[in-house]
Length: 392
Ligand SMILES: Cc1cc2nc3c(=O)[nH]c(=O)nc-3n(C[C@H](O)[C@H](O)[C@H](O)COP(=O)(O)OP(=O)(O)OC[C@H]3O[C@@H](n4cnc5c(N)ncnc54)[C@H](O)[C@@H]3O)c2cc1C
Image (cartoon, rainbow, N blue to C red; front, side, top):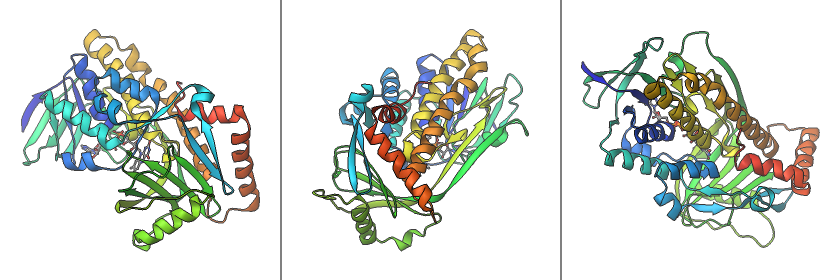
């Protein structure tokens, strides 16, 4: 067993763990990041791609926005399509704000490259991660490195940034956490296609046969989604069927969907999940380790990065200044924003998807709500300020 010492042990090299390590490094706090996947896997894992303006500002302040500022696509609104008609919501006009398309894969690459350049501890392909002693002043992080060598890292704090299936949330004391959860009765079939987007801004479409989303990762790569039944078998969806269904759901007069080679496809179930509190003793949870939203509101990545911005300040106060006040307020500060985003994501999901066996009352209630959003400036503003990120 190799014994080591650090100030903050970080479990998980997703966006949350990597950004936390960067923010701490800028404040002179040492950390060790351990990740059970390979670097190549982390850099290729297709997930989110839409950044709130405060997320962009956070990445700029952390010195991580050179490529984001060059390659990110600033969007001033979205299209909302239902009942065969497409409507534009203009965020610049409604709330004076924008969002930016820049893939999570690129953020992760930028963060890994910065940490590697700085020569700071970042260990991929590790296994058997364990956290112990969170009720003491020196919790211990244990893992086996890629060669199977066991390590024991004595920390001041452990940050659980290990996503929904990680080991840190289960390491919280039994009976401490309250979990609120909702599973949705449908899933998203997502594709990444080597074709320029057929739209300048994202299209959120409610079709009688289910939701569809036209997103993008760059000016060359499109990302598209279809609502499919829960546990849908991906082999039932050859490329031709996917394009035909996308055409059908997005169809409006004088608009064309560009098709291209499908680079990747997957089916993702949808869930809302919030576990509270996000801290026990010297273990702090951040990002998907503590909460999950369905992707319809484009909030998961933004929430994860917002958590670690608060956490970094709290840990600097605790470790450098001996001030435990911000650490004590961490969970409540994050959960207020998390619940706003959880509500918004649920609202977008519930109004745009067609659940199995939807009855005429629910269908008309959805359509009435969508008509109201595009007709009322007040309703459109509510959507815009949540989509761009409510500060709370
Ligand atoms: C398929 C999918 C599609 C998504 N699409 C969108 C979207 O379109 N828009 C959006 O806003 N959000 C989306 N999300 C959510 C968004 O990607 C997440 O909210 C975001 O990745 C959260 O970052 P994180 O760092 O908290 O967690 P993660 O990105 O999950 O990172 C956690 C890391 O911890 C590692 N890890 C886990 N267990 C251990 C362990 N025991 N030891 C060491 N390391 C461990 C994992 O390998 C992973 O690298 C999607 C999520 C998924 C799963």
